[in-house]
Amino acid sequence: MSYLTVTELPAVVAQGLRAGRLAPYLGPGLLALCEGPTPPADPLALAAFLTAKVSVPGKIRNRVTAAAQFIENFKHRKTLVTAMNEAYARAAAPSALHRWLAGLASPLVVDAWYDDTVRAALAAAQPRPGAWAEVQGLSQSEHFGTWTGWYDAGGEPSPDPVEADTVLYRPWGGRSPASNYLVSDSDFVEVLTEIDIQTPIPALVQQRRAALGFVFLGCRFNDQLPRAFARQILKRSAGPHYAVLPDEPSRMEARLLEELSITRIALPLTEVAAQLVASAAQPA
Image 1 (spheres, helix red, strand yellow):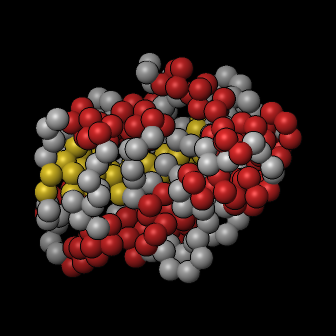
Image 2 (image 1 turned 135 degrees about the vertical axis):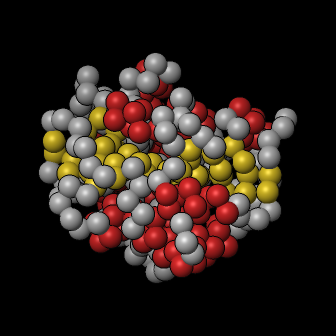
């Protein structure tokens, strides 16, 4: 397998993010940068939270999608949504990197986790009405036939796409503003049956990505779900792409890096975050 690994942060990453040529693609690992308490910051932690609320068979206790499916099947979807709301009721304080990214007015930000930290940072950094809007993936068990929901910066739903300066795309949903979650096995099966032909990906996201590369921050690809979504969200995008992955990639991660021509930045996320935030003082 062949993909490029660098041990220094390329200057073009900060420059591209600041110029709106590169889009942030954010994962649960970004919560590690936040000070103070945080909600569940990885699938294992989320599975532990859910199974502490509802007893599930031992063989699926550590598999969050299977545990969520069990709760949905035997305790009702509302019980699952309530548990997810409780898991993400604790709001993390946005880190310096969250705040820096929110202030860039990027045309597109992908946030592939359930906490509201990114949207809180956007609300603080871009208070002007119309500056940003949000689109979330919807569960077919609750919104059959409708794949995404649009919301303005105030959290009000919109029947149509919102043409804002920044579009926050949360493909797995999130707690705010409407408790939309893709979390159970059936949630993801429904999306994955259509994602190859791009149906669940909003047209406006597809339009904007055509001129963008992506920078993965706080993401891992050691599970089929993040790999599948990364592959389809990056489809027909302009590139180049970068991923902060300090640990040696697994075999499947390495395959994805090669397939999508993603340059691996072999640095700790804390170090990359500090360099990106410091770049604000540099000329564009």
